[in-house]
Image 1 (spheres, rainbow, N blue to C red):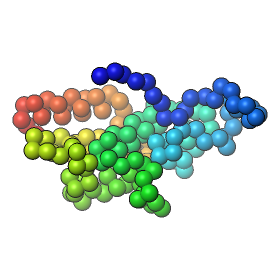
Image 2 (cartoon, rainbow, N blue to C red):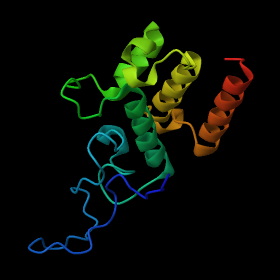
Image 3 (cartoon, rainbow, N blue to C red):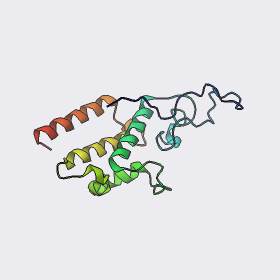
Length: 157
């Protein structure tokens, strides 16, 4: 139970021998960790390319991390090629009703609240929406987590 601080690769490079202007704000430098940074085509000036970061981009990364934890697959898994991404894989499972089949088997046991697990995948998918306007804000995420916890403890879910 020790907290660790991490980031998704957005820390500024302070010194890199042999690379001129490592700290420049060039829009040709990719910033972020592949798979966790928002889609470049939609966020070229917001997050993936360039120097501007946003809370919306952080929420995207958080959503991908949540989906990864629930499904047990990284966004760079070889199964995600072409148009299939971790986000679309989870979103399709939600839409088609087979989320339990794609969850990490370690999460499933007789005492688990399956509806709560599905709700967590839903939160991850909404947070990692391609469009920043469709993503939850962190306050809503916390509220949703609290609602899931209360519903699980009271037996509502």
